[in-house]
Each structure stands twice: as structure tokens, then as C-alpha cells.
Image (cartoon, rainbow over the protein chains, first blue to last red):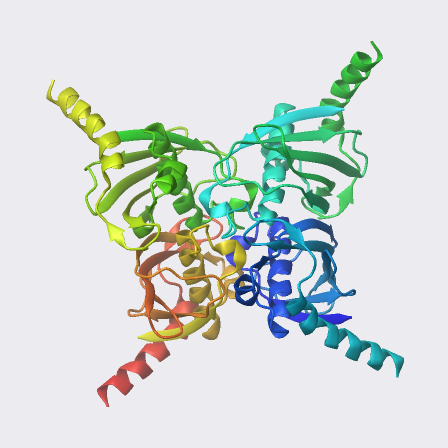
Length: 143
Length: 143
Length: 143
Length: 143
């Protein structure tokens, strides 16, 4: 499993008149968390693009537990539980500073060829980056 | 069942650099479609607020089928399949002009007391507006 | 002068926790009003793109007079006071249903070649669409 | 003069299909930079709100110089050149990593009483925070 942490403070324009982070913005926060996770492993969007790949989202499933508020520090934990094949799955948890769960969600993206705009298998350069991390974490789990 | 149609043209700022409507914006379009449906039945947000009610979203589950593009006319069909109790469920389909499915989704909101910020049962004034429509549509189904 | 009217209802995600339309959204509304004006004269963004042109904004100057609120009907008046040369100027007024001024603004865009990404003079096909309207309105002013 | 630095990376949903940060988002970035400057001096929005104050924007004037792109590191310099009276003025410069100017802008906000929603003079607790910094910087200029 790959796990990564990303922190964000909701901006003024992301909060609605109930005083809560507008629900669609959780999805954009999770996207940002995914981007930061992939950046850590040398897979930022520029690298993907240079390799002719894009990663459109094909599903997003989110449960909202507690409203998040303007300017409070939120921590997003992103998890990849399986190496990607055609689909690439991500799990997200957004929590407040004291640990309270704000939302949890699950999203799937696919690898799409930038030119043909057709879906494809997870490309080699992505697998090369991710596989070693999965093997390490399996070993550390065994110990 | 209650069904309603809402049309929207993606704005320039809602489209990403792939040339597609950014995925989180589908959720905001569906919110707008829900608002318009409720307005039709005398339940716009001002009426809800005047009655001390707000409707925060507690879940959203969406599948993306085909990318939507800038400025194309999209039609959102919103369906309420059951009268609300504690939860109030909505189904959404976004389609292109030729009928192609862009995304379909399911969302749940709850009735929350504006003052106490606690969830509550679907209030009487909401049921009075919605019940007759369900009864009509049941009759028309029977015939 | 070319003048055009566009109407919009602020969406829930466009309003901040003061209960006002977030100030940056006025700019996106004005963009939408400009797009609709140009569409009327056969110059929608697809036509521009097909002609290898894009219209990036180079300045925006806005004064906010009265806050706009969620879901209220706003009317945007867009005015082109001069035929474009290198710069293409637009004036916007956003008003409430009773006529109260919400904001007024002035924006300039330039014609940029999609391939070279360099600024250029207003292209012929744009002038052909706009010139007759200016001449008509000059005549009607003279009478 | 008070000067402060804030850094931001444009998110995927903030970039348009030209591949540029959508122009209205500069304004939201500058808002965020202003918030961070005020936070530094003990004047974050919660403190303002607790003191019954809000700061709606009354004008924004921006010139766009070079497009900003997705994911690149932007640095926003915010300057307060005068102590506020009725109006509170901010200047912003957004620059790329190599120093290239992306946009520069000027914005005014006013102090509004949260209850009456009327404008008011810069309140005492704000002046107490800002005055010493201005005096310090005057001294350092004299030397």
C-alpha cells in the first residue's frame, strides 16, 4: 500500500453561506492530494503528459461526515491499495486538526492515451515507479 | 416518482486543460438541477431557509461516461424516486444534445435544523408539497 | 455601440459565508456575458478557435457597489463602444431585478494566434461581423 | 509599508483549456495572499469576525502580463502602502519562479460592521496591530 499526507486550508471562495466547505470542493481537494502523492513518486502531471498519458476520473464516491470550515487546517490521507491495471484506485480521508473525520471517498481514474483519447493499460514507466514501493511495504508488513 | 429537466452550458472556467468539464463541476451542476427541481415545487432555498431548514449533502456517488465540453448544451434529468424521511435521495443523469450519457450520479441530503444544526425528519411543509405529486404519478402509473 | 443583455442566477457554490456572491465570480459572470454577446454575432468560441484565434484577458477593472445574493436574478449589460484593433474593450454592468447596480467593470482582451501565441490585429472575419452592427447603430443614433 | 510573500501552485481545476490559469483565479489567489498577510499580524478572518468586522472588496483592478500555468510555483507579493482609514488598499504582484511578472493588481476593501452591514472607520484593534509595523518600517527607511 502507498500512503501519503497532504494539508490544505479552505479558501474563502470555497466556503458556502452555511459556513461550510462547499461539497464539490472536497473532490477538488482530493484531486490535489492525488497529484501531490504522484509527484512524490516522480509522476507529476507534466511527466505523465510528456509520456502521452492523461488520467481522467471515471468515478467518485464520497461520504460527508462533518462539515469543514473556512481556514481550518485539513489533512488528507491518500491511499493506493493495489497496483493499477486498467483502473487506478485511490482512497481519501479528510480530517480536522483534532482527527475528526470530515469525509472519506474512493475514486477511480483510467490511463488514457493523449493522442487517441482511448483507455490503455497502466504504462511501464508508471509501474516502474510504483512497484518497488509496493514491494517495500509488503516486506515491512511481513516483518 | 418526480422527474425534472434542467439545461446548462459549461462555462469557460469550468473546463480543464484536457478540454473537458472538470469532474467536480458535474456535482455543482447536479446541485443546480436539484435546486431548480425543488423551486418548481415551491421549495426553493429561500423557502427552506425561512422554515429554518438546510439540506447539506451527505453522499455523492458519480460515474463519468463521456467527457462534456465547453459550451455544449447539457441536459440534466433529476429524479426523486421515494418520498424523503430522514434522507432525501436524488438521481441525476447528464446527457449531451444527441442523448449521449455524460455522467450519472446519486446523492443524498439530510434535513438539518438551521439553529441546532442537528438532522431531523422531513418537515411537514416539504411533505405537503411533494406527497401530492407522488400520488399523481402513482395513479398515472396504474392507468 | 453594441449592447447585449445576459441573465444569470448565482449558484450556491458561488456565494460566500457573508451570503454574498464571491467577488471573483463577477468576473466569470462577465466573461459569460461577453461569450453570449459574441455568440449572437456568430463569433462564439468554437468559431474563434476554428479560425485560430483566442482572446485572453489582459485587464479587468471592477467596482463593487452592492452585494449580489444567492439565487437572485442578475442582469448583465455588456457594451462594446469601439471596434477592436489590437485591443478589444468591453464594459459590463450587473444589476438586480429592481435595477440596483451590483458592479460595473471594464475589461480588455487581445487577439492571439493559437499557434504562435502572439498578439495580432483584429482579424478580418471578426471585423466583418462587427462593422455592420456599428454602422447600423451610428445611423440610428443620427436619426 | 508592509510587505508579505505568499506562494501557491495552480490546481488542475484552476486552469482553462488554453492551458492558462483562468483569469478570475488570480483574484482569488490575491485574496488568499491578503488573508495570509493579515494572519501574520494577528488579523485573520476569525479575529475580524470575532470583533464584528468583515472586509468586503469594493474594487479590483488587474493587469495580466504573462499566463500562469498549471502546477508551476507562483509567488505573490502583497503590499500595504498606507495605514487604512475608511478604505484599506492592497497591491499584489504575482511572479513565476524565474521572476517573470504574471499579473499586478490593486484592490480596496472596506471595514463593514457585521451586524449593521454598514461601512465604518478602521477599528482600533486593527490600527494597534498595523501602526507599529509602519513606524518600524519608516525608521528603517530613514536609516
